[in-house]
Length: 352
Image 1 (cartoon, one colour):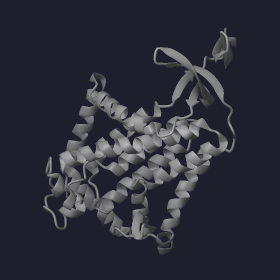
Image 2: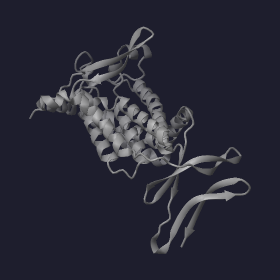
Image 3: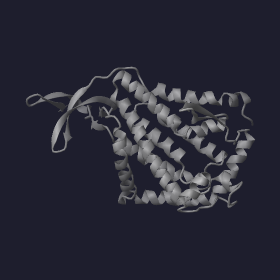
Image 4: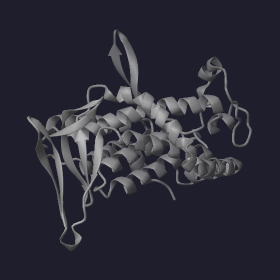
């Protein structure tokens, strides 16, 4: 079994088709109207613009317009919430299961990596790191801003590089500005917030774990099956040979997981996000085994971190309003209401 050379030649186009697909299934060209709501602020309340969105048949949400650079203010809070959530009493069993699963996978890492790469050779899927740098001229110097993948495996690898998520965020931002859609603008803010939170978290864990990447271990590195671990590596040594210390956990998979979590949380009525997103994550995970960037035991913690960071970012800038059931003749409505002199808020009315 071999992959057609035609498919390999067209691999770069596949990347942009994937991004176009995500944009087309999420966004509908419709302008939304604002509603004034009363929101708690310090020791009092204030009026704030919001938009009411039907998330699904049982849930509405209020989306607020994000302020410029609001995401930056949220990053320290996200890091605090991540630590609090991770080590909360209710989540300790889950954390233990993740670490136990990781430990089991470490034992089989080398065999799984060898099998994945053997399968890649069987289907003629290149494991080479083939990129073409895309450069721009800044102040007379050419700066590389993007590495364009040149084979199919690197297209899948590129999905976790961050650029696809940034492109998706940029698409939501442009759409949100053009149509006054607060949900799209909040999606952009949440994605941006998540990028910074994940970057800080995964870099911290990589530097304290110091795990060797497969392609280093099997060529110029330790030669130890499963790679060597060098915790708390000197920062200067780390920077001189990043791939020798930065395998655990996978920032690529964490970014992909967080992106899907945010998109699916804001657009739960779209049935394609999760199956398409998780399928692409599977291809990304395999591609990183095939090119020797990660061991499979780098994945469980990365997926958990990505999901948690995505959920934390998703809680920003919106308020969930459950609908009442309409069974047995009951009904519910949500509408603007006048409160006092010049005060405007929301009224939630239920009829039984």
